[in-house]
Length: 143
Image 1 (tube, rainbow, N blue to C red):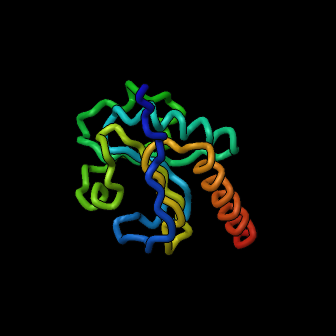
Image 2 (image 1 turned 135 degrees about the horizontal axis):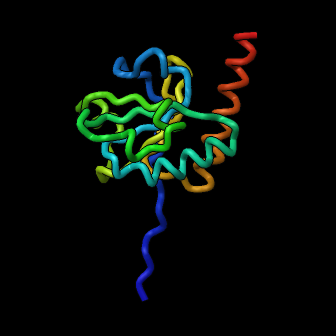
């Protein structure tokens, strides 16, 4: 009998914040994708974020002719930005398939954690712990 290799998302830690990350999302957690087929993976991320009490922004790098409003629920579409396909983003994320989603957690100067693909339980636990820490630091600095 042949067994498949266990799935592992690509996880990268503590990389300098590239100039291609807009200031408005450099200090937050957000989700993205390069193809509408990534929506099923994004659904996994969205459920995890919602259970954690957080509603992340979403950024698609797509041809603007793709009809997002017909495939996304209104609550998700309202926090979704579409940018033109950018080679620099694809080089940073390096998805192994067009339908890969990704999650970014940034602290303003660094991408603390980049996850390409849906998370495993261990990866989500680490991401959530970092997210909670980042949010508590933001709350302290704003209060």
